[in-house]
Image (cartoon, rainbow, N blue to C red; front, top):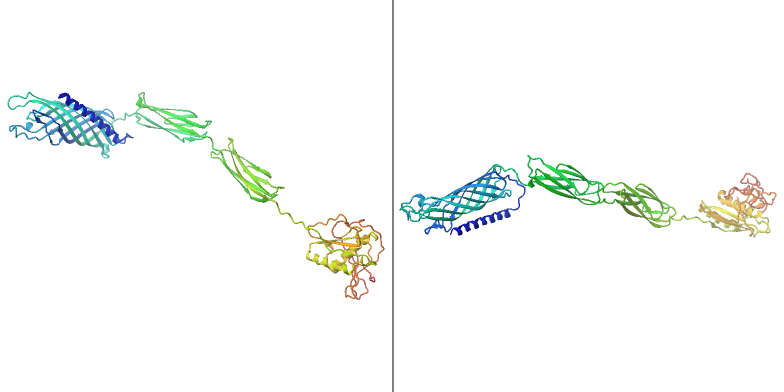
Length: 599
C-alpha cells in the first residue's frame, strides 16, 4: 500500500514538471526582462483540498466535499531561478460526526488538516508571466475520519503554479491564478483498539490541493544572467577606401565589474575603441569580410560573450556618360558642337575623349567641335567616352546628319542675235535698219535685266582690213547708247576672227563669266572711224543720219593695244546725230565735233 502511494506521489511530481514545461512553451521564449525578478515572494491564497480514496477502518477522509482552505508561503530566491519555500496550510472540513459520536469534540467532529512544509522551488521568468514548480516536505497534523484525535504525521507536496506580475505598484504585486499540488501524508494514531473514547489507526492521505491568491514581491535580484554581446556593421556594403563602423551592443553587464572589449577583422585596418571599432577598407579586394568582437567581465563563462558582423567590399561602379550634338542636322562645312556629361557614383576623377566616323574632331574637356568641311552627305556617328582614374569607362553615342549644301546657280551667258554687214557693199561697217531691229531687241533685254552686261564681238572677212571688225562693234555700241539709252559701262566691245562680216552679241548676267579665247580687246583710240555709224529713215525729225568724222585711216592690227580690263570699254570719240534742220554738227560724246556726210 505504501509503495503504491509513493509511486502516485512520484507520478504527481513528474506530472507537475511536465505541466511546468507546458507553461513555458505556451508563454513563449524569454525576451528582454521588463520586470525585475524579486528576491522574496510572500503568498496568501484560498483554495480547495480534496482527499482521494483515503480513510481508516472504512471511513473516508471526505469522500465528496471539503470546504475551502487557506495557504500561505514565503519564498526566498538565490538567483533568478532557484529558491527555498516555506509553506503552511489550514483546512477545516466542517464534517459533523455527532450523529455517530455524540460526545465528540470539535477536533473529532470537523475534518482538520494543518501542514507545515518546506523545500526547493524553481521559477522561469517570462516577462510578466512567472511559472514555477516546487517540491515540499514536512509535518502534517490531522484528525481521523473515525473521530481520531488531532495527531502529527509527515507529508510531502509537489506541484506547479504561475504568477502574473501586475503593471501597478512598481511590479511588486502579482496574481497567482493557479497553484496545483499533489499531497501525500501519513498519520499514525495508534492501535485500532484503545481505551474507551480513544480511536487509533494508520492514516494515509492522497489529496489534490488547488489554490489561488496574491503574491507580494519584495526586493530585486541582482542580474546574474550571462553577458550578451551583439554586433552590427554600418554600412555593411562598401567600396574600397570606405570606413565600416562596427558597434557592439551588450546586455546583462554588471556595472560593478570592469568591462574589457577586444576586436579582430579578417581584412582592413582595424581601430578598436571600447564597444565600437572602425575598419578602413583602403586597398581591400572586393569580397566578404568579418569583424569579431569579444566582451569580458571575468573568467566565468557567463561573464564573457562574443559576436561577429559581416561586411562586403564591392568593386567601384563604372562611370556613366551622356552625349549630345548641336545641331543634329547640318550642311557640309558646318561646325557641330558636341557636349558630354559624365558622372561617377564614387566621385572619381574623369577623363573625356571623343571619336567620330567622319570629320575632324577638336576636344576640350567634356566638349568638342566637329568640322564637316569637304564631307559628302552622310550620317556621322559620334561617340563620347569617359574614363575614371581606375580605368573604368563608359561610352554614349549620338548621330549627326550631314547634307550637301545647295549648289549655287552659276549664271550662264546668253547668245543674242547676230548682225550681218554683207548687204551694203559700199558701207560694210554701217548698222543698217535690219540690224537695228536686232539691236532693239537687245536693248529691251538689257532694260529687263538691268544688272547684265553685253559683249559685242566684231568679225571681219579675210579680204578686208581687220580694223573693220572693231569699227562694227563701235557703231553697234553707239546705236545702243545714243538711240536706246544703254549705259556704255554695261557694254564691252571685242574683236574676233576672220570668219565673215558679222557681229555677235552675248548677254552676260551678274556672276556669269564671258570666256571666249578667240576674242580680244582693242585700243579704241587707235581705230579710225569714217562714214555713217548706223542708218536712219529719211525725213525723220530729230534722227538725221549718224556720221563719224573723217580721219586718216591707219592700219591697226586688232589687239595691238588693249584696254586695261576685259570689261566694257569707254565710248569712243564719235559724233552724235545732228539736230534736224541745223547745219551745225552735234558734239561728239567726247566733246569733238562731227561733220555730216551724205548717206
